Amino acid sequence: MIKRYAFLFLILLSACKTNPYKATNRDYKKQSRQYARIIDQTPLDAGADSVPPAPYWVGTTNFNLRKPNFIIIHHTAQNSCPQTLQTFTMTRTQVSAHYVICKDGTVYHMLNDYLRAWQAGVSKWGNITDVNSISVGIELDNNGFEPFPDTQINSLLHLLTRLKTTYNIPAPNFIGHGDIAPTRKDDPNAAFPWKQLADKGFGLWYGDTTGICLPPGFSSLTALRLVGYDIRDSSAAVLAFKRHFEQDTTRTWGLQDEKILYTLYKQYQ
Image (cartoon, rainbow, N blue to C red; front, side, top):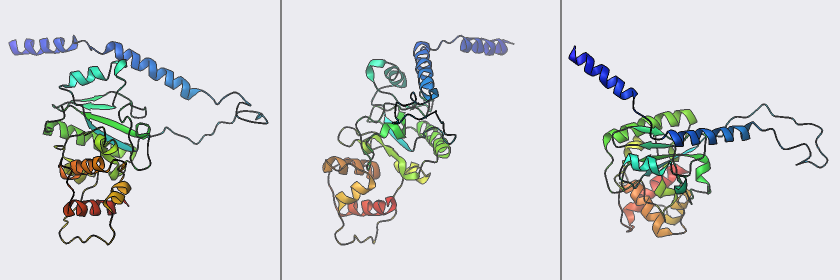
C-alpha cells in the first residue's frame, strides 16, 4: 500500500512540474503563426510584376514545402544542456538549432525542420554559401573537449535515421560545423565518432589505403575543394579534414593523408 501511494505521489509531482520555457514557447508559436500568414498570402497585387498587368491571379497546384538536404552536427561549447537551452531561447544571442541532444540522450526538438535555424553562420560547402537555408542543425551537449557518451550517440543515430528517411538526405550530406566553417569552428571535436555514423549511412568513409597509388598530378587542394571544403585558407581546410576523417588535430600533411583524401574524393564525385 505504501509503495502504491509513493507511486501516486510521484505521478502527481510530475504533473505539477512547470515548463520554465512557457514564455519563449509562446513567442515561438507567435512567430510561427506570422510565417504561416506569409505563406498563405497570394502573390502581389495584379500588375506588380507584370507589364502589361495580368488579368487575374493563377495559383499553381504543383508545389510543396522546401525540405532540408543537409545535416550539420555541432557541439555546444557550453557546460550543460540547460545552459544551451537558455542560450537558444534568448533573442539577443541570435543563435539556434533544430535539435539539442543532452549527454543522457534526451532530445529537445527546438524548431520545425522546415524552418530556418541560425546555426551555420558564415559558412560554405562546395558552391553553397547559405547553408542555413538547406540544412537541419543538431547540437550535442559537449564543452568541446569531452568524449561523446554512448547514450548521446545512440539518440543521435536514432534521430539521423528518421531525418534521412523523412527527407531522403544523401549520405555525403552529413557533415560537421567545422567542415563548413573551417576558419571559425572546430565542432564537433576530434573525439566525435564519424566512422560510426558513416557505417550507418550518415556520411562517407574510406577503406584500406594499402596499395593505393596516387595518379600523376593529384592535387590535394583541388580534391579538398571538390569534396566540399572552402580552401581559401588551405591550412584551415586541411585541419578540418583531418579532424573529421582522422581524429587528428595537427596541421601536418603527408602521403597517408593524401591517400585517405584520394579515396574519399573519388566517392564524392
